[in-house]
Length: 144
Image (cartoon, rainbow, N blue to C red; front, side, top):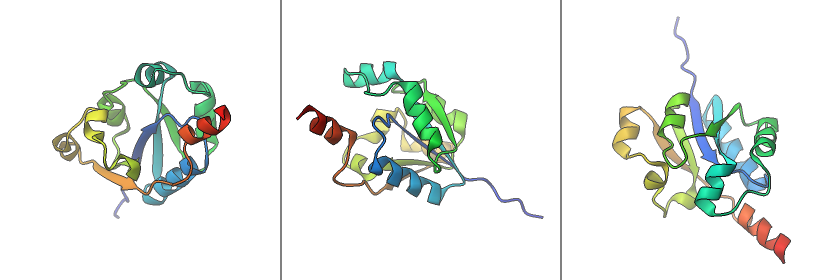
């Protein structure tokens, strides 16, 4: 009898002010994998990286993600810019990111190389970015 290997997908982010773009992205993740794990940026890391705190704190963002039917688990991104420890704790088949990262150095951002992904049998996939909505855009509208 053959057992089906569970496909896990890892993605990470801040997920502040959860919106349609987040939901679309997570839905695409769930269509690819049996288990979707979100590595959620901590408030401290967000401040260190963006020099501002998120609108919603970690607990609120985690609760919202856990209420999303496309998310199976939320873990803290405790490694900050070095995402390898969080990724290895999940042991995913895939890492999914938005296509908005296609023109940026995602490997440098996450602290890994293609060789590291290959050694760990992880496939990096880019999913279509939802245009016309982003947390940055929502914040701009609120300030206007």
